[in-house]
Structure formats: C-alpha cells, structure tokens
Amino acid sequence: DGGITQSPKYLFRKEGQNVTLSCEQNLNHDAMYWYRQDPGQGLRLIYYSQIVNDFQKGDIAEGYSVSREKKESFPLTVTSAQKNPTAFYLCASTGTSLGEQYFGPGTRLTVT
Amino acid sequence: GQQLNQSPQSMFIQEGEDVSMNCTSSSIFNTWLWYKQEPGEGPVLLIALYKAGELTSNGRLTAQFGITRKDSFLNISASIPSDVGIYFCAGKRGGADGLTFGKGTHLIIQP
Image 1 (tube, rainbow over the protein chains, first blue to last red):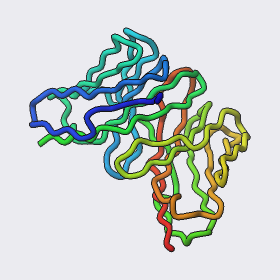
Image 2 (cartoon, chains in turn brown, purple; image 1 turned 135 degrees about the vertical axis):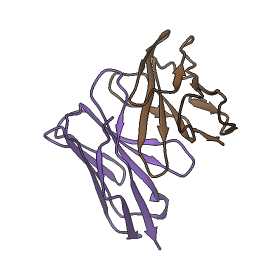
Image 3 (cartoon, helix red, strand yellow; image 1 turned 45 degrees about the horizontal axis):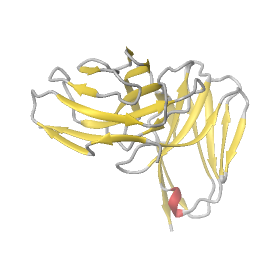
Image 4 (tube, rainbow over the protein chains, first blue to last red; image 1 turned 120 degrees about the horizontal axis):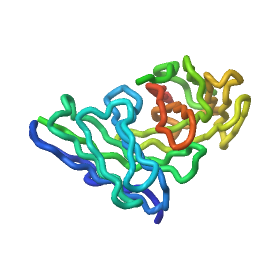
C-alpha cells in the first residue's frame, strides 16, 4: 500500500523535553511538508523540503527543527524552545509541481 | 503568516440540501485545493484547480477557481450523512511551496 505514515498517533511529553515526530512516505515523492493544526484552526506550515538534504522554513518554524537525510523520511523535532507545542501535527508530500499535497493521519502531541 | 478567509464557519443543514462554501484571499494563488477532514484524521484531497475560471466536479462536489485567482468556491449537491466533516480550502503560489489554508467550514447534517 502506498501512502504516508506518521507515528505515533498520540504522544505525551513533559515540558522542557525535545520530541521527534516521524513521517515516512513510500510514494516516491520529492517534496515533503510539516503542518500544525490547533483546535478550530486551519493548518499552518512549519517546514518543507523539496529535495533530500534541503529544507525551508514555513510560517511558524520557531521552536522546531527538521532533517531530510532520505527521500522517504522527514522527521520533525519539537524543541523545548517551542512555547506552545500541544497541537495536532500533520505531514504531507507531493510528487508534482502542480500542488496536490497528500496528508498522513497525523500525530497529536500533548505537552504538560 | 496569512490564512485564507473561508466562510461560512459552520453550516447546519438537512439531508438532501445543497451546500455552498467559499474562500477569499487578498493575494493571488496559482492552485486552489479543497480538502475534507474528519475528527482526528489527516485532510483528504477532494478537488484540485489549476486555472483561473476552471470549474471541476468530483461526483456531487463542484469547485471553481475564481477568475481573479483570489477566490474559490465549493458546492456539494444533495448532501448525505457521510458528508459531515470539516472542509478546508488551500491555496498554493507555485513550485513546491507549502499550502496556505482557510480555517475550515464545519458541515453538520441533521437527519
């Protein structure tokens, strides 16, 4: 089955800890994206990567970091510098320049 | 960062009714996309629009890319219970840029 997987589905952390969210795709897509969703809100772009070993900041990159060492994988680290990390995190990918992004099932992160 | 202006915020309708929602922006987009999201899940792509003035259908769904490239609308005809969810518009300027999203329209269908 081709698709995007995110793990885990739910993640709980204590304040002050860094946490890494996984995103893997087997669609052979070049570009991958991370979005954050807060209750009652649309998605906001955190980081994106168009090719391996390259990535760009989105609208709300502060407190987050990413890496793109393999085409299939685009992990997101939520650092202790992120002031309000509790949110629903969504990963997406696209294989064309037309713009059709396909999303994974999401990871709900709760920091207390 | 910018978010698109999507309206209405929520809709309470009877099964069988038609639904219309729209999205506007102060700036131009080259691609408009419409997604549906159910609770706790990732958004699912419904329709993609690539040209100003384009009208595209997907079953009971029809969407249009506004001629000014600053707006788009989505219509759902003859709504059924499984249409319940949150519908998002999204715009993209070009290349492999990220998407800019609206805040969503929450569709609730009363039997």
